[in-house]
Image (cartoon, rainbow over all chains, first blue to last red; front, top):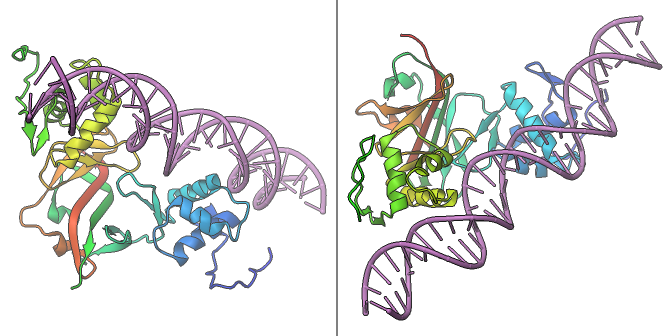
Length: 142
Length: 142
DNA sequence: ATTGTAATTAGAATAATTCTTGATATTGGC
DNA sequence: GCCAATATCAAGAATTATTCTAATTACAAT
């Protein structure tokens, strides 16, 4: 394979395979878009950003690639209400704060040492496989 | 109006108005369905259950009524992933545990005295208007 | 009763996502 | 390198949940 062409904006090197998933040109580009601008874009936003570099990419392929990346645990899919799914390369366990005024989505980390079972009354025998925490609100001047 | 026909299952009396919302026959029936069987039904499930009592109810009306109830804070709309919205008459602040094996959704209460800011690193100045906590997992024999 | 407003209905329209099918690309064996 | 097997991609059709539109109906207040 040819080495990556020099490009106007900094382009992180994406390996040919991640977590057992073959990283094709499309998948690389889509993953690159997610890690370069971590603003939780929708599939359609990813599509629009990717078209510059891959002019004959289709939206269906963006969905396919995003799903492949999600399935392999490379990115996460996040849903707010009934809006379009958004995608996020942050693999730490974290929640989201959705600023209602600006629409900006902030990643929210847990304070160290916190365990969900400390704060929630889970049903007996519950084994948690996945956690989704979403806050909606606004940011005021502190 | 005729007094309520005796029915096989207990039917709570629903007032003519709740939280400033006029409770029409359709809204009453839909709200009754939600409080009688608190299993977080979808709009379509509500529709099917309601048809017995209101044979010429339309699905659009179910959506309209559910939205009116949500807007007036009488019920809550909850979303799991990209599935159909589900509706819940539990107004306590609570989360949900989605049992992946059975599909059953359990309401999860916070332990008393817990404050979200104790466990999450919120951005400075964040004012929370709404919280959504969803866990997915399974129940094992304790 | 009449009139105005809100609610309901039925079906069309929309939006996001998935599916289907055929074309392309890639990999591994020879 | 060449070919077969497999994986990926593209284009558009199909699906699903939900919303919208327009017309009808119910209700409330005069």
